[in-house]
Image (cartoon, rainbow, N blue to C red):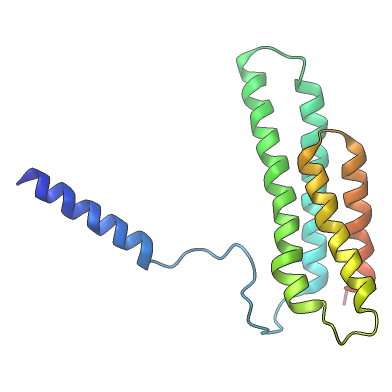
Length: 150
């Protein structure tokens, strides 16, 4: 009987995970027009700041051998990855799907600038130096011409 109860609980947990709503990580792909594009660019700049702090901390911690420093090093690597990926997702899942459109007269230029952000964020993930972070910051700032503060 105990095995039947355990199997039943397992089924309930599995069904709950599949049925219950999940928190959205990015904007849905319904053009509702409620999002502030400038705020999304500002959020990406906050991600850049976090990445910059992560790279700084990684370079400070790399020579340390105590367990606490190794643990913190790992956490900073994870933060660098997470915030770089958030930038990539914002560009791919929001801007490229909803804001960069083929009928815009400067479509190719917009596409290039948005793509540059994705490539720069990828380079940040691959490296632990400030140069890629500086490039990423410059690329994100370049988007402000399309999404000025209202």
